[in-house]
Image (cartoon, one colour):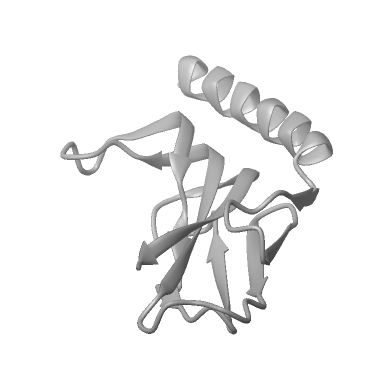
Length: 118
């Protein structure tokens, strides 16, 4: 019980530190996109004029907090993980992503746009 309390206290202090440093605007990979992030999520808006037919982007959000260990359900770990996203979006559209999930909670450390389909 004491060990669990110590881990929780450490996680809360690390999340607080990340919250102070984790807000602001991030640089997007495709140059025609603007990525804005806050404490727990990110949004992207792209405005590309000359793009190939069928191109799609995806917004990736990197998080730090409590998340499930892959292939080890129901165990959780404190550390970096990738958050959820709304799927791909068109070059003249936008997307959202979050560090909150059914079993995860954390703060945004980075967010960027990648080409999902070219």
